[in-house]
Picture 1: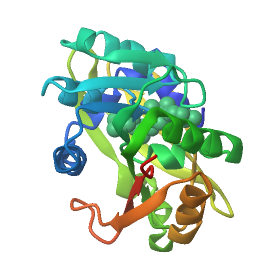
Picture 2: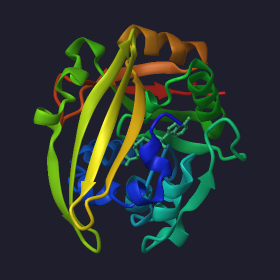
Picture 3: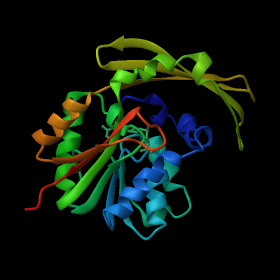
Length: 243
Ligand SMILES: C[S@@+](CC[C@H](N)C(=O)[O-])C[C@H]1O[C@@H](n2cnc3c(N)ncnc32)[C@H](O)[C@@H]1O
């Protein structure tokens, strides 16, 4: 786990209210249609937003997530029974043979350690049917997104039903090569509680990701732009070759 907030029940419950605009998922929905996927594995499904969106369209979805508190939020949502939820990561999946594997919202960066990263690519490859695709995004390190992760630029204030007003912001605490660690602070107006969570993300370059995909037997079909964040993200489309 590289993001403590996803494992803390109080913070996991804030993820959807603090991030209500999920326009980033439109590109993944379009790719699901483009590739005619009927069975999808969503790795790092978090609170299940994308998995439930797909399930609502009649797609057979498996969501895997190592942060128990996030998975509990997902499991409690309307329609959750349509999704197969797995508590864990992609290194220990049952046999699936899906058409598409997704990792939305920079899950790839949250998988910071080399063993976990390679285990994820191996697991994704094994979960796909021959000819199936893996799609995911990662921030372009050249854009140095972390330079905007300070209180001034990341401050948010949200009114969360049942919780009250919550203020939050990020602050980078360490940059070590391609690893960026930052602290998110949450202030609950109702009782003045202050909670923090630390996260570490890996910023991998395009060539590095392409080489890793090839090393795990994927053919890189293309590297796209994220339409909602032009020029800032790489969206990889990798295919498990036909048998
Ligand atoms: C920024 S969140 C995105 C959640 C979700 N995909 C979404 O679009 O809302 C990153 C997620 O990656 C998960 N994660 C971290 N390490 C992981 C791993 N090794 N395997 C799978 N998921 C992981 C975190 O627990 C978290 O839920």
